[in-house]
Amino acid sequence: MVRLILDTPGGAYPVTVGTNLQRELRGAVARLNPTGVAVVTDTNVKPWANKVAKTVKRAGIRSSVYAVPAGERSKSMAELEAVLSFLERERIDRGGVVITVGGGTVGDLGGLAAALWQRGVRLVAVPTTLLAIVDSSVGGKTGVNGRRSKNAIGAFWQPSAVISDLAALETLPAVSYRDAFAEVVKYAVAMDRGLFDLLQRNVPRLLERDLGLLERVVFRCVTAKALVVAKDERDRGLRAILNYGHTAGHALEAATGFRVSHGRAVAFGMGVAARIALALDLCSRRTVEAQDELLASFGLNTRPPRVDAKRVLAAVALDKKARRGKVAWVMPRRIGKAEIGHTVPGAVVRRVVTRALA
Image (cartoon, rainbow, N blue to C red):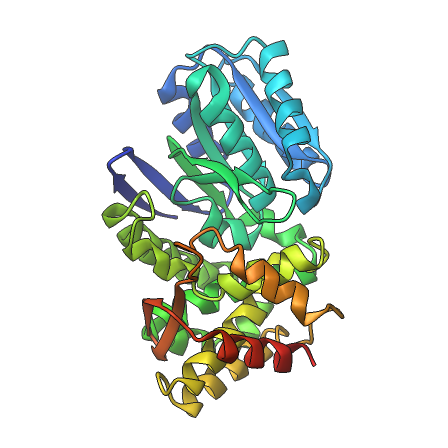
């Protein structure tokens, strides 16, 4: 088990990574002394959420569980209203705690509900997918999707604790598990050459879900994110580095009606960003090839679903980080280092995206 403290202007909180962390979860919740606990989960993970609720009840704390339909489509205003109604029915007051149990969809949705209910109640994140463990559960971003834009409606709301129990990954479907390595590779390419080398050497062991090795990988990802979030909690500048691969990736998700998984969309977006950087002489061909090879080793180089390039390009223009209609791209310079804030000529973006979807 490893633990780090993420210190942000919005508050400091522990992130614990390990296996069979029921005792740590019970202690983390008990220290908050809640008047009641509402567990938000989805239909796929409800059995694990029920275990979380029982763990909390052993500490003598009232708890109840609400499950939204599994899938990205639950990141909607309709499901947000449903979760808020659940909190109201359960009489969660300002002394209460929301615990999110699930992947990124549940974390974003439940986190936003916690930020809104009673103008903010405390939140404990229990991520159950590798993607959520390495990325979305840490940093305080919550939200739901707009009709045309990914994560367009949201708030910054830091959790009081994050409990990442790697035992949950043992039953995670293989496709979902592999998809998460897009975010892991993102950290490696954009911020951590040592992590890139570690991944290259250990692909078979990681695919076999070696929990000891996974703990090391997760800790490096979370540490990288924590250092950025501590300096730029509200995403005003430096934090944009975490958006590597997400500009075109989010656009692909929106253009396909979220039929493509987030991990595969990010892998696509990283490929687009690297090829734009190559076209602008910002990185070498070897950097692009090395990224492609590592993504391929995790099965993430597959072609995206058939989609009109014009729809993807239109969605790129709606990127929530755009300012005055100009999209700021994160560009790789070499493995382990990316730069934020690049404005790219429209013709280059159109050419690269069109070729990527051909």
